[in-house]
Image (cartoon, rainbow, N blue to C red):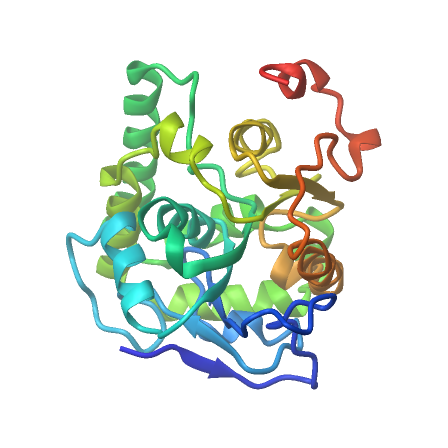
Length: 290
């Protein structure tokens, strides 16, 4: 399988902006649950490749897949080094690629992903989370996609975007209603049955990683991403005023963050304080292990 190429407006952040001698890498985009390759249309990227999850877009279902198995598939689909961008569950797959195939990753962006790792989460809390995500899949499987539509859009977008029928909301609405309910169950089952990355896997990552959180993200929040930032050595944490689906709701803001990542990545030094930290109050979490 090869990635679907995304045509755009002429922007091409697939090469390091400040290192002309760096080896070129393939820019690979990994979308969230319920999206497809077209979700990147609002960013205006060129020469990027979007990989679709099983049961999404033009791909058939593949019951039983996991984040780890899909990470292996992504790496096998391309030659050479990769620059990775993952939104939501796509970010979890990016983290698995970083842990399982570190020699193939030049840089990575993990955005709005609340299921990368939980150093302090108990097994009881993890099991409760597992039941919650399976429940989301079961509701769609049993009641059809229309029954999960409104609740999902409310979690993904700002109330203003939903109320004004923002173009990103309308894209998500169409994509969700066209999705096979069984594929919806599969993807939530994949999230429920995939292992959290252990702490040592995250602390061993060497590639430069930008972590992006949405200030108005009611799905992933900010605390879990701050914890991942604390564990990945060469990382920076940028907070954007946007919701969970910021690539659909605030694409220009996200594109700016991607461009800043690719300027910083050749240096790759750790940036301890969050960018936009003035909006983030949980400083105690960030001090742990500093």
